[in-house]
Image (cartoon, rainbow, N blue to C red):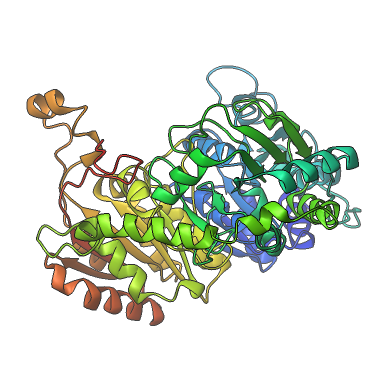
Amino acid sequence: MLVAKAIAEVLKRENVKFIIGYPVNPIIEAAAEADIRTIIVRQERVGLHMADAVSRLSSGDDIGVFVMQHGPGAENAFGGIAQAYSESVPILVMPAGYQRRLANYFPNFNSTLNMQHVTKWAEPLTMGKALPEVMRRAFSQLRNGRGGPVLIEVPLDVFREEVPDDFVYAPSFKSRTAPDPADLASVAKVLAEAENPVIYAGQGVHYAKAWDELKAFAETWNIPVTTSLEGKSAFPEDHPLSLGSGGRSIPKAVHTCLQEADIIFGIGCSFALTGFGVQMPRGKRIIHATLDPMDLNKDVPAEYTLTGDAKLTLQLLSEAMETLDKTQAKARESVPERIKSIRTSWLSDWMPKLTNNEAPISPYRVIWELMQVVDPDNTVITHDAGSPRDQITPFWVSTKPLSYIGWGKTTQLGYGLGLAMGAKLARPEALCINVWGDAAIGFTGMDFETAVRENLPILSILFNNFSMAIELPIMQVATEKYRSTDISGNYADMAKAFGGYGERVTDPNDIVAAIARGIDATKNGQAALLEFITDKELSVSTPQTDFKY
């Protein structure tokens, strides 16, 4: 059989359910013939974002796959691959490549060479008969260790080569590693004796499916829990021990408890320093449990380390602590009440914005009403970069694992739309929502048509304040001179023109009814875009509640 057909056969054996792509690439046709659903997008970056969500919502069991043409198709895909790399998401990327005789010199874009720094693994398929071993390496990298994009470039002339019909290929497996018993014993003693420990959970908890273990550990030892943006929903945020989650903006309880902590226990996290993540207070004793030893002592110095899968780590740590004295844990019995008190006070401070009834509409009012209307247990929500991210992350209460796709490292505008569409592929029964702004829709809005065409009835919540509000304070001079942040558009009409449901909302009293109509549209199989005309809100929740960009 030809190479493209053999690739499709391997993907079937690896239980790949979707191929997302942009023509022309022979793998698309071969996958369709093999009864793998193919989705064609309007631009490469959005397709990669869709593949990203497919992998995330299965904790890496179902691998998202994106394919594209050689040259400009591969070049256009670079940003989406870089985003997945920064968020440690395992996706398979298979670009076509220039013929082998042309691949290695200017001006031809060589994906293997140019993307090796934004991929976990990158190699070309140099001959048809090497396909089984190349694909074996690719899927082994995808299913083991730290997540990240894996790229296999297929030169155009290699597509014309044959692979034996009876080629041997066994599906890949996932292996797990566990921490050193001596390290576990040391950490167990430190945590048992800690007065004010805090757990900081990252997305490694999602990939290890360690949700039950995290919850049981926190409850047994009465330790409050916060998460990274990527780890949000790893711990139920309606739980009495939940501090909430955030990045640049955070609930007050997160800041307060981290400042008061004598031990911060990071599990399944990198502790990466980023302007869009929780900043760890200086001088704290850190326990760092991570799958990837490259994380250790990279950004935050750790006193104790545990290297291994988050699920195994929590299981073994719980066992190591079973016989230890629980005096300190019992002394923390009032912690849930204190968390509740801090949260109540913080929400009270924010209620004027969350319930604001003035026009233009406060984006916080939309978020607040959205939370009241949806069923959080059957919702997957994500955000876009900038203001939507910082406005929603502290206030949205995630109750089930993988109900929130959080991100923030390279902060590409327009990321949320593809994530929502990929979420709908992975979880068709759920209400899948992206919250974005008028700047973000300028980057990827054309792919709302993809949601309509591919029968992906997502709910898109758009905050339109006719400006790039986050840029206003730092772009004031440029704004006055060049109108550089003055943008506009009627995006509800755009959604309707594409065949979706579109509605523009200007009156705060119409928010709830509009959301209900949008949800009904998705239940009827129609992609919906609700455009809320909002004010130029600059305040976000930080330790100083009056902070503005």
